[in-house]
Image (cartoon, rainbow, N blue to C red; front, top):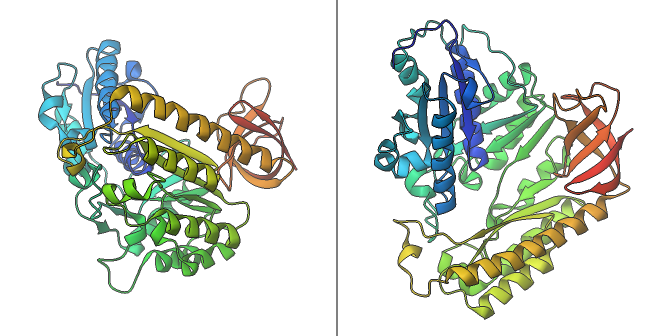
Length: 428
């Protein structure tokens, strides 16, 4: 492709985790710094970038579907596949007629310059010299580390993200301060394995990083995206005495059966998980605790599923992300005996999803009458009704109707009622 434009248009579509969202936010800034204009749809764009996920076979399928749709909607665009699927199966994606260019995770840092070269565009100004327009986001995804050394039996992530690598605290703090200057009100600390942050940097761990962030930044809210049960300690939770860290903890359970957890090679059992939840709730009443659960892992029989269901029900999560187990080539679980057939997985997934809906409903109902701080999303109240949506500190999605300009504003809001996926609220 040979396209010369003063401001070519680019759209970035992100699949998967908050780490991918962080990478996409960085890419968006780099594209703007290189003179590109961000747009919302493939049909508008000269360049379409998919930052892909490969955690399940369904993730791969969604990536291929999006790439084909992008090509159909815009036959002349440069369609770029990057991310974890591109890392795992670069040749497969390169063979797709819809795809112009494939860059794996390790090449992602050169994506903008590679695209510019494909378009015959000279990138003139550096990151430090070119001003960046606001990205329309109130929450900044801040990558603090990448990679995972845990090697859980089912997980492809270590192969596509590599070994654990911590980002120096000075760079993290500078990024948070930069994002705040550009209008962000909340920093979400993301990574593949946050709890081991600092193992490769002398004299610091996750608690130490959070202390420095609280001392050296002034952003209104901090959120930690995900922690393993064994990584949450009383020392860490002491930092929530400061009002800026959000009382929301995503703690992946994966299974409520100790037999299955051992086969998965997880580093905790259900007793340790329950102790962690009790510790969080004792220290931080009202905290939202969300989780991930895999259904149909090899060897999961009727007893193991019943144990998993019962344990998840006993915890009372505020939300549950439920996934049917998906064979990932190159993981040890792909070669285990006792693969669960598709019909059973589908049935068990349905049961666990019903439990997830029940638990979520109970948490939301329990919040009614509370007054909580809400960060209202920008650009969501421009309709004639003045309906705004936002996120509480403990991760409830709320809506309100107001003639006030609430975009990117934090206010207290009284939680009043339930409306499908939303909690209705009144600004106070």
